[in-house]
Amino acid sequence: MTIAIYAGSFDPITHGHLDIIKRSSSIFEKLIVGVYDRPEKHLLFSTEERVQMVQQAIAHLKNAKAQSYSGLTVDFAKNVGAQVMVRGLRMSSDFEREFEMAMMNKKLAPNLELVCFMASLQYQFLSSSLLKEVAQLGGCLEAMVPDHVAKALKEKFAP
Ligand code: ADP
Image 1: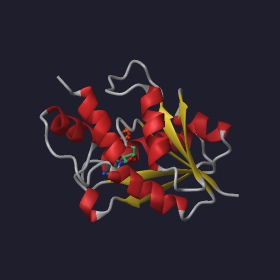
Image 2: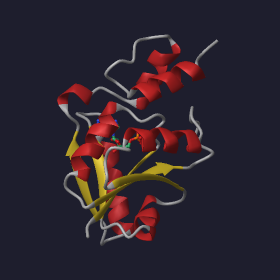
Image 3: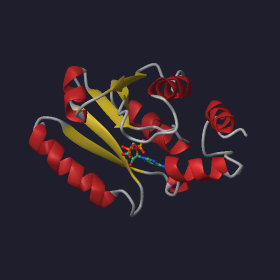
C-alpha cells in the first residue's frame, strides 16, 4: 500500500490545500495530512484547532486523515510508514524554497519520494497568510476556505 503524507502548518486550511488533498488522495491509497505542531512558530490557530479544521474538511475522503506532528517531517513520514511526501506548488512563490527543502529531505531520507502537484489555476494566489490579512480586515472569504474555516476566522477576529 502506498502511503503519502501532506505536511504543513494549515493555519488555516484553504481550498488550495484541499485541492491538493483531493487530487493526491485519488492517487495514493492512504493520505495522512500532517499538521505541524511547532509552538515557537507564530500561528493564529492552536494545533488542536488546525487539526480539527482539517479533519472536518476532509471527512468525506475515506482514505485521508489528519494528525499533528512535531520534529522533522521526514521522521513523521517514517513513523507513519509513508513512502511519499506530497507538496503543492504555486506559480513562482513556492519553487525555490520547495527545491531547497526537497534537496535537504532527500539527504535526510533518501527513500522518501517527493511528489509535487501544481496548484490549480484558481488557487495560484491563495495563501493562508494573505487570507488571514483579508479576514482581519473583514473581507469576504467565499470560495477561499470551507464554511467552518470562514466561521473560525471570523470568530478569531471578532472585536
Ligand atoms: P507551510 O507553513 O509549511 O508553508 P502550508 O500549510 O502553507 O505550510 O502549505 C503546505 C503545502 O501546501 C506547501 O507545499 C504549500 O506550497 C502548499 N500550498 C499552500 N497553499 C497552496 C495553494 N493555494 N495551492 C496549492 N498548494 C498550496
